[in-house]
Image (cartoon, rainbow, N blue to C red):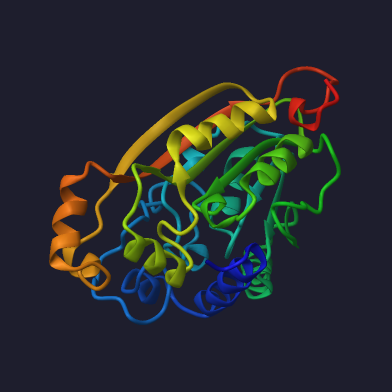
Length: 280
């Protein structure tokens, strides 16, 4: 298995390639990754086109949900998008928070940041900014934002516990998040696990749903809710590249599932720091 740093490098390199592709190119490859895919359908993405603020040039088809639709944002809010890509969710959020609000996107891929900044400049938005950084070490001060959103990114983060601690840190007391991500029910076959890592997306890094929700609660978040849950069906022509006929049959009968979930949670109205840090 690759180390955490090796996984980060795989993701960074792959998403640098994706930043140079169109949405159409991404939709005809595996979860936005280039090459080697036997399927021509979008496995994860949902349709953003009917949401206010949607910008075609910022939509690379890389998400697995619509977190901004569930994020309970309001005019004047400061919103942070974790893994902001070309800026799609940021521009949708900006349509809600308005001129009086602020939207910050953080991404660890320089090519994505450049693309997002170019999109914002073209749109003339002065209250949307993009910062280069990692989710486990966010380039923001504590108690800074009202709402955090993220779309199919935390599954790619090796240290999810630290990612949620950082999310907690930058949220204001009574702030909240709405995050769409990929989780599992049951254990994936080894061959499929390796395929997911190769594609630096899809189900790579996904953990069991109960573990995902437990991490959120242990960080100190309250009122944790699954706002939406959707089964992701991987087509047989993709699965057969990595599983034998017998393995494929066993997998399909196992009850193992890959799901897109959108999770909501709130930071308590307290000056106390995160319980997971041991200071409360």
